[in-house]
Structure formats: structure tokens, C-alpha cells
Image 1: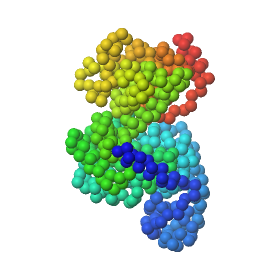
Image 2 (image 1 turned 135 degrees about the vertical axis):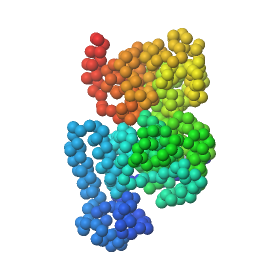
Image 3 (image 1 turned 45 degrees about the horizontal axis):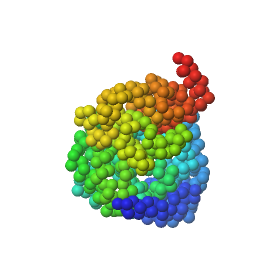
Image 4 (image 1 turned 45 degrees about the vertical axis):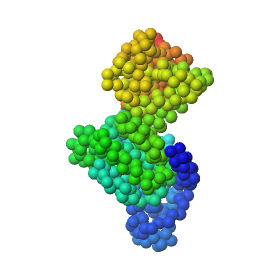
Length: 490
């Protein structure tokens, strides 16, 4: 498996980095209107007259040739005009309007679309991915205009090996796959979760230079348990409850084997699977195929980098990470993934393989070994009674009580519950045993973030280290210090 992973990584490195600076010539096996309807090759009014004659396009376009740069400027003018026209409207309305105009460009001219993203990634990343992608997924069936990516369903069992060859690209380097069961912090959105693989791959193209013709977003539709979607006449997915057990795994098995048969070097990213299937599929495929789970491993990698950064911010050596007291709120695939990777880091630093400084909470409070029906994935991080007795904690202790008694160096949220780090919790972080306590509100989209940075700095102090999983406006620390001083007086 390690050899396969290295081969896939080498394959990605060896691929010419995608660029939109000067669109390169392509060999096209289409003519006429077929080219204009193919966003991979369409240049809109940018086709020179020689190409219009050669490709059968003369008369199918307005006579004036508009250069690539002129098309770019025209789109940006339209976008800025949209911003002005939507001033004062609700954020959700504005965000969806911006997504629509970008999506129309994506449907028409991929090269221009990615040029726009690459040049304006800071402004457009929140539109093509979090937080706007959450709104898109919730309304996807109503927003649907043109298919993108591939859809495999429970009805396709036995057909996937042939279906995989329906995708027009002979080379695929990166696949992002979801079953729609746990989309961001929004829960089961069924087939509407396809917006996540699409947005994620757009980010990879714009930020990492992966060729957009060599990526594939995939929805694996095994049904939905969301009653609202099942009753929605516009819902585009299977109208049936989710498959479970071996029925579910047989569908995933067939898909993964089909992908491996056609593109053995492709990296398959599992995205937004509910916790039980996230861990099950990772253990099932990681030694057979080149794959990873973004919620377990990707989020954990980013979180661990932030956790190690907070140790440095405290002026301590990285080996002191083993002594950090970390409270994690959220026992799903992301929260457990962070703890697993943190435990590996402690072990590699020569620390104990035990986890006396990690405290895990779910909706029922602090998880201990006394918990009935405890999730097996959470069991390694459940506290024994003797570990928490001296702190005065018990099974099911609430977040505020845990923060007050543990005085953690790090408070990390992956709960999907917006505002769970409320005023009292943030004020309690002032008593942290760290000179620079860290607060990571990593849930997304923005409405599901555990707290906002302004509240964190205002209530917990300006010396905190803050990180979030969704974009927020910059914080003026001078203003925060004034607010913090007032908070201290109250």
C-alpha cells in the first residue's frame, strides 16, 4: 500500500501544473455546437476566426472575437455589479447569488472559471466551499441545472465496473467521494451532498494546481434517512432509507474496485461519511487502495499542526505537547481523528502511550469507561474513574464543569453545535493553566462554529491562540483589549 501511495504522489507531482495564464492548445475530437456545450473546451467568444472555420463554429458565435483577458474583465465587472445590487440583502441570499453566477461560468467555460478562482481565491473560496457550500447542498435539488461529476447508487449494483467507463476522461488523479450521510455540520443530505466533492476539488484545482480534467467528484447514493428530503418532490436522490450493514459495504466495495480497475493510481478521498462508516471504510481500504478519509485524517493533520503551533506560541519545546491538557468537544469522526493523531504524536515524541491529558465530550457530556453503549471508536479516549476523581469529575460532566476543573491548555470544538462555547465557557478559559490558551472552533459552516473569534478574544483574553474551521472577519485586537478590560470589570 505504501508503494501505491508513493506512486500516486509521484503521479500528481509529475503532472504538469494546471495554469490559466495562457490557455494551452488541446486536441479536440468535437465540432460545432458540441464544443460550445463542453465547458472543458469552450472559449465562448474567444475562438479566433481560424479556429471557428476549422471547428465548424463560424456563424454559431457573434462575429467579434473577445480575448481571454477581456472575458475575464467582463466577468469581474458583472460580479462586482452583483455585489452592489445585493447590498443590504441577507447574507444567505447574497452568498447564493454569488454562487450562481460562478456556477454559470463553471458550466460554460472551465478555463475562465479557474482563472477567476486562482486570481481571487481569498474572495471566492468562501463561495465555492465553506460556508456557502452548506447552503448549496441544502438547496441543491432546487438549484440543479447541469450534472457535474458521477452518481453511483444502490440501484447500480452489479453495473459499476461498466459505468466507470462512462466518464470521458481517460486519466483521473483525484477523486472525492461522499455518501451524503454527514455533510459538514448539517447531517444527512443524501444526494445533495454532491456539492461537497465539487467544491473541494475546485479548491484543489485553484490552490494546488491539479488539472481540472483529471479530477472526479462522486456521489454514492445509498438512500437517505432525512424525512424532509424523502417528502420533497424535487429531491433528486433515491427515495428510500439508507442501506446498512453488509448491503452498504457491498456498494462501496464495488465502487472502489471499479475505480481501481480503471485508474489504479488515482487518490480516492472519502469525505463527510458518518462516523461509523468513516472508520469502517478507512480500516477496510487503507491497505488495499490509495485512499484517505479527510474528516479523520485531513482534519486531524491540520488540527495537530495548530496544536503544535500553540506549544511554540507558549515558548515551550514541541516535546511539551505531551503535557498539554486538551478538551475535545465532539466525538464524531473528526474529533476522534484529531485525538488519534495527537496520541500518535505524543508516542513519537517519546511520551506515554496513555492519554491522561485528553478529555472527550459528546452530547451527553464527558465520556468515561462507565458510559453505557459506548462507541468502540471512542473507547480508547474514555477516562477511567481514577483518572478524574481528583478533579471532581464524573461520567457525563458538562462542558463548563470540565473546563473549570481541568483548566485546559486547549479547548477544541468539532461538535457541529453553533455557540456551544458560550460566554461562561470562554470566561472559564481565562483560568487555563497555559499562558496562551488555545481555542479551536473548527466546526463548519460558519453558523455551526462553536464561537466566533471576537467573542473568544473578548471573553477569554487577547493572549489566546484562536483557529476556526470557517472564515471570519479579521479581529481588531486594540478594540478587543478595550472590550476585555470592560469584561474584567463586570
